[in-house]
Length: 429
Ligand code: CMC
Image (tube, rainbow, N blue to C red):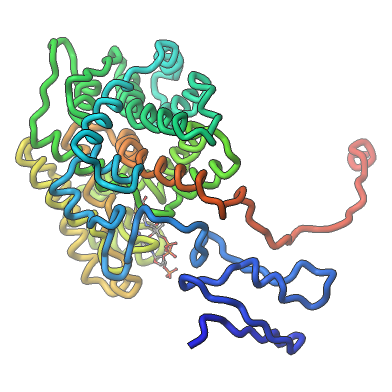
């Protein structure tokens, strides 16, 4: 067997031998296929990167048909059950699990970089009373680049490390303050004696008590949700981080771009959309009419379907279990019955079966977040905090990858050519 592709151009009769490596061909190799030397040669057209690899990566492995998700080779199920978010963050960033000393040093570093400059607080207070917390998070993460101008020295490994630590450490502070802002409540400073997830809950919910203490089951569920969201290879927001990062800008600007991508309803914004959808459906009796609307193309069943998973989303299975743990503390969210019935009906319906549409990570996460008293606008912020180590691991891999170039796709130009410009006063006469 030869690892190559023989291509015959039927326009010219010419044949080309193109090497196959790792199940891919280099798109640039197609450039040699041309009608004559004056033209640019053959390219591929792939809106949405449906079948185009943009990088080599050793971070996250997904087998969408088998429902497998692994971070650095470790199955998500084992990490969710036996690890914790900061250990998983270490694994993603460093490529390996930490020794005891490495783990303690890492937790200490993250824990002691949770505070932000007071002017960041002033900056956040300037947002309108009803500002969306995702917009506030995106802007404040981007603003951090102005507080750490040395972050632009991306070729320096020590400098890269400290910015990564800062970003993972400060995201909960910024996210919590965005939440408090909408409620008109004073911002709560970090408590560095608490764990990552518990400190976040403290900054969200602490009022006049001297020390916040969260229910361990809630703390664990939140930590698990962060683990499940920590990375997902080349999704829309990671692609945004890599694309912007490929210009060699600082990591705060690159991650701010990722937060923007995650904000959209087809990506991280889906859990917010799921909850709004469940509220709109309201009761189990209304489900059949809603499903009909989806099949007629009038609606979309949010929280269903995935570009990669065509069998099941392993994260959705783990979240269902976390739902039970949280509801044990908070009482069952009445929308759970609507979600379960919706899932049951959809999984039996030919429309969804034929298209391989299954619940994704966002289908149940919103119900947990609501039980934890988060308004829907905060759901994507929680996703972003969990995803930060993944974005940063991908950014780190990108900036050290000798094969990477500035992201600059081609286009197929469809507009007019060589028009003669007529000045405004003549056109409007
Ligand atoms: N409800 C109804 N129909 C759907 C849905 C859905 N949720 N998802 C896909 N379809 C249909 C789609 O209309 C198309 O049908 P047809 O072949 O008749 O035109 C077919 O299934 C294939 O869908 P697609 O849009 O080509 O698939 P895609 O890979 O481009 O989109 C997706 C993936 C996740 C954007 C899409 O499934 C979707 O919009 N789902 C709802 C939003 C959502 O839950 N997003 C969260 C994704 S998981 C978390 C994350 O990564 O952020």
